[in-house]
Length: 373
Image (cartoon, rainbow, N blue to C red; front, side, top):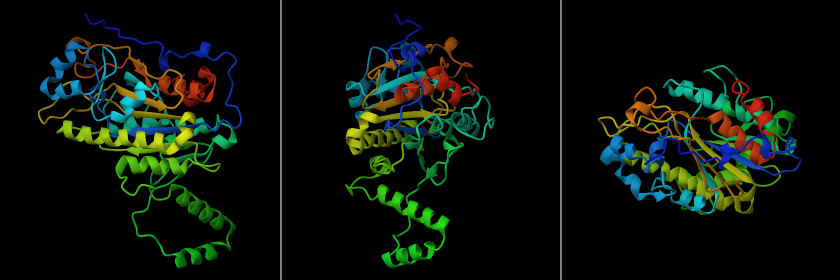
């Protein structure tokens, strides 16, 4: 029989203050790196990390969930989506961990409000004008407090008292060298513009073009991001935005494509960072989950709880799945339609970062998520 409370305590959410006797703030010169990948649009955690050991899963989803069984079986309960081949390899190497039935404090179904809470870490939508990544920068040594978003502008999550930067690759043809020289000479007369121009050129050089010109999509993004994190001036805290997760119709093919891209992104980060993968933590999370049942167009609608992922070369508890599993019987669903949340994103994120940077968990949680602490 399936135990309603499938619970692994040795994973990241099993960490507590007792795991860090005497721990303080991160020591100088840690060279630790952190990458947060947001899945904008509400990713279906029940498909990403399918609870195939729960008999009510297939009853609820029927034939549309049959492909879940073709993925990588991680334990007696959960199976990883077949598109996530690199992630499955990392899990086998204890360089990946997964968390299920998790959500932020938000319980409605607006993308805008849910993403605002996921990024700000506030207890209500638009309750703060800074983000938990921005607050993380204040806990780190100066050399580690270098934030960057691969986006057209700095997202809410990275805003705070320490300025972060953004970088978006241009889709325009490259300017010729003569124009670049003229602009450099023009800006040289202004101290502020000269510094900004030099910084922009340095960032562009770090991002560079893919060493392998055949790389596309997630793989190219991973290689470019690793370039932006290299060297003494490289970013240490990075946010990446991924889209395509709002699968209201024809979910099977659309989700398969989105998961392939994020899986390639993670694999490319690992390969491109080389030995620095040992110093890197990657977190993947979404604003909320999707309904347990499929709708009439082969998709799922806005839900509540979902799954999150951690990757890194030195995870303290890699190769584990953390889930206080609520069950998928109709009587166990949130509002009769959604996976019920039994774990909080705020605790998951703060505990993972405290472990990664060697910080005190209680103080980290109070700093990153003061409304939750």
